Image 1 (cartoon, rainbow, N blue to C red):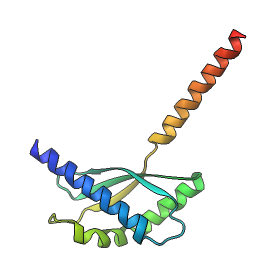
Image 2 (image 1 turned 90 degrees about the horizontal axis):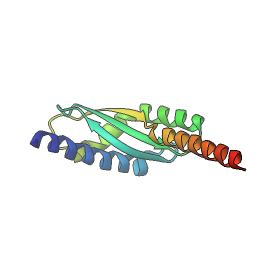
Image 3 (image 1 turned 30 degrees about the vertical axis):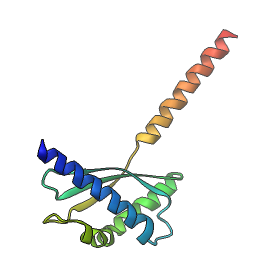
Image 4 (image 1 turned 45 degrees about the horizontal axis):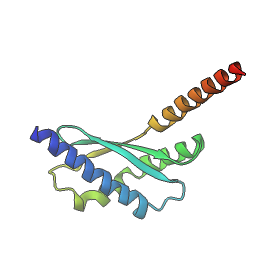
Amino acid sequence: MAEGRRVKKYADLLKRVVSEVIEFKLKDPNKGMITLTGVKVSPDLRVASIYYTVLGDERQKEKTQQVLERSKSFIRNEIKPYITSRWLPELRFFYDETLDYAEHINSLLKNLKNDSDSKKE
């Protein structure tokens, strides 16, 4: 149980620190409006999967993914002073499709509601 708590605390720290680095220190104009939605860390703390969303269309998502991939080493170097574990984790960035999926479900539900309303009339 303590091991799980340690990993969760470490993931929360990474989320906060990486978010600050991306927002304040990453100066690439193509990064877009990035929001980190979650961080999952492997039990050995060597790999961090970072999930994000970005404001914009598919083209902006691609640009943001490219910026994050190019900036991995910069971000790792910037988080070094805040990480107290023996190893600095490998950062892996993934677009979080949860919000897109929720929007899709909402639009389907609205369509169903509109269809049922039109049938009642």
